[in-house]
Image (cartoon, rainbow, N blue to C red; front, side):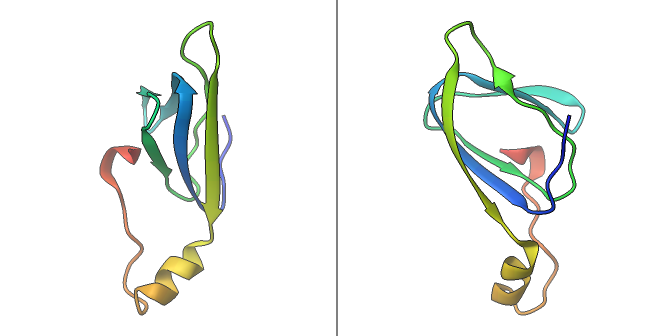
Length: 80
């Protein structure tokens, strides 16, 4: 398990990406988008023996706050 100070926004490119987040095991299939909120513990591993590929971008919460004019940070229920 680990966490980030940023939003982690990712896309599964191939295979099955499995991860524990907010108390449950989740799976992202190719083309699936994942949004992990700052300071939320999570892990990540291949969901099958064939592995997986993904791309992730890490966005500082301050950038969202600036774009929102100081409004509360967005929350995506379920993380994906």
